[in-house]
Length: 137
Image (cartoon, one colour):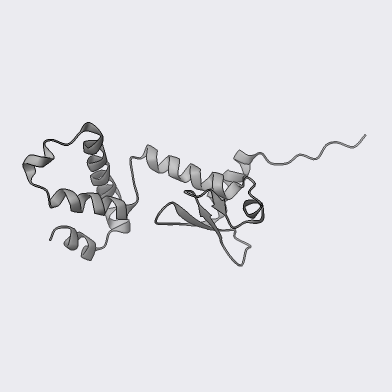
């Protein structure tokens, strides 16, 4: 009797993507993911739920989308947001009357603190000196 062929679980395939693929995060929830042996990268759009891989083009769940969502989850757990979004929020804060900032709702306050944490945590990695100078103008 032949034994049934064993296939990796989705979690195992996602882990493979996270460990071995070249992954780039772009703005607006978009990622590119390139396998070590591939010529071209797949594009994953987490906002639309689309991936350019064969499974994704057929509307089926794929390991690339699952990996992108895992990265976003990890980022959320670190209290980070996209650097450009953080810069936009902090730019708004800088332009406000300090008295107005005292009236922020707890949700708005949390978003401002999250933006600040993102800038502090990822400053050297993502924010250029010119962007910081522009923010402080």
